[in-house]
Length: 229
Picture 1 (tube, helix red, strand yellow):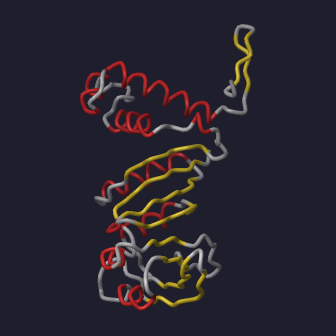
Picture 2 (tube, rainbow, N blue to C red; picture 1 turned 90 degrees about the vertical axis):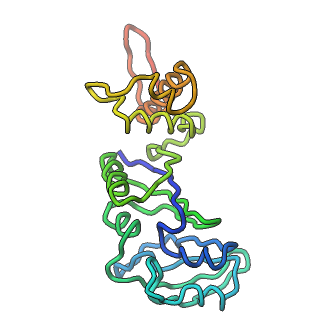
Picture 3 (tube, one colour; picture 1 turned 135 degrees about the horizontal axis):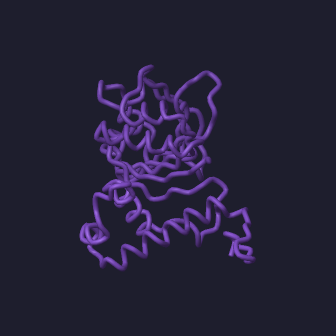
């Protein structure tokens, strides 16, 4: 099942890190185009800075995550400046992991020292592989949403608190066959009561299942149930 994830990383984990250091007020948005020549993220919108300063900050310097070339293409008053960029043919770090993951980049915006991403994965297992690879390369993601595609009801999205509880429980082995941690352990880690963490897990499970089965109905014991209820 196709799934969307939102996450945040520090600016240093992705291209243009030096730009944010030199010009902290700029914002960068990867243009959502599908390149026909295999190029990686060929266009970006940059706003909040002078052209000369932007181009100087993006001059190739041998530093990690700096584009090889940056060319001004167009300017829009309400959007900023559109640049065409070329990258090292062998990208590294997060840019390489995203490229290799098979994910579709839905959006990527850099501002105020961090990048916020929305990626779409065709298979849920790909998300785990993506997270594991980030973890093994010491790239720290802050996950803020995990949502099945087409699951738009706001009241069924995971809240940040529910997501935190579910992710912690998963990483600590709470769902393993031989459970490695207890609810008390999770509650202590989050700093809330055992009852509260249990409620977050329960509601988080319900919201995830509501997204998975939102269009299905089933009759059990003469009662027809639907995830729309």
